[in-house]
Image 1 (cartoon, rainbow, N blue to C red):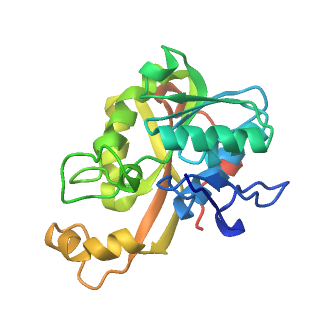
Image 2: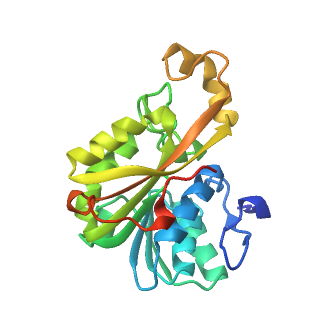
Length: 250
């Protein structure tokens, strides 16, 4: 089986160490703008000794960012290729990450975490059913892009310690307000802490006529907004937030 090495522009971002190139099996999601946007929030929130869960780890880039901050990291993915890729990257960088193959919460056996992070599949797709194999498994999120996002919102309270934090990135095409509402229904208070406007990639460009037909994008629209949402138990909403989590533009 042939593997590829990613370029430094999609490597592992770290304020102290710069970019670290990552190894990746074919079909495993290559870190892109959404990964890098979320990585900055992870680096702001992670502290040494934290228990961190990375849901849908892919190449392991976000898990590795948390581990570089001194956290104890568990990374989970439903793809064996992704799980193997994350294990290899952790070994290459000599970082003690536990990688599990499976779904959440089953793969973590009722454990709770200080920080839960995820870059889930969120791209709206004509097929309502999530793909069971292939690269599209890492980005297709059902007709409205929310299938996996909603699962994470519902599961988050049982995964977080009382003072725990959820960091989730997705495209505004999947519905930012819908995510905030889902989190509120689950007893979490969420807010946007980072965002970026980026050009459509190959997948969205190929689906633009369908997205226009569905009313998800306007005619002539060529960019999407990425958002990072930070959520915690609602009783923490009134507490002062650290300055590093204020809303910022990429």
